[in-house]
Image 1 (cartoon, rainbow, N blue to C red):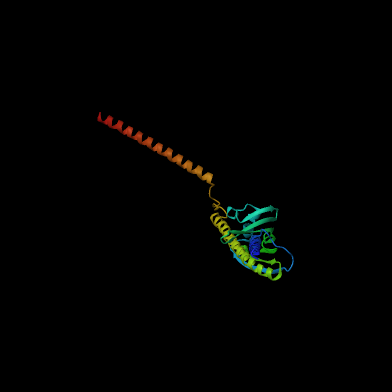
Image 2 (cartoon, helix red, strand yellow):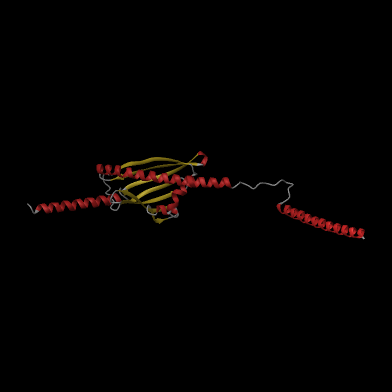
Length: 256
């Protein structure tokens, strides 16, 4: 009997370790669970964000890290694994917090339909099923954009899957909300910068009156006027010197 207690404790320890490892693998997406039985699905969103930026600008802000070069600020959050002309396979990394410093990893396909839609589909992650979409619609005559986010998330094993969906969906929607807030800030910054440059650059140069001489003609006229002034001044000085010389000669002649 006494010999069985250590074995039971050992088995319990192994079981607890396996459960902990399984939980960590499931949470981080390293060991996804996709059984295909008892799947429960719930909605994600909707989330609506109005942005003071044209739709093309908002779309480019979303697409650039995937289709172009990701900024350094996203280096530890996004990695493009494969890239096509309008579709990529990308890994996203989300810190989970806590003392363990766990990071959740999801791998998704991202499809771009310019300029109105971006679709996401989960390939690997903490749940077996996620589909999402960003839908962009023009507002205020094209000067503004409304971004609508929605989707669905699903997990297996009936009630357990339903509970797991609730836990994952809460964090998932928080992460999406933070991403949309960052998109809004950057899109509005770029739109404001463009508007500022447009205000500083006039649409056209000021027109001269029809009878006004061309700039080159005005320059030649000014040069001619300066030359004539110099000649007249030289002539005046020369004339003054001649008068002084004559007056001196006349004074000398009178004194004799």
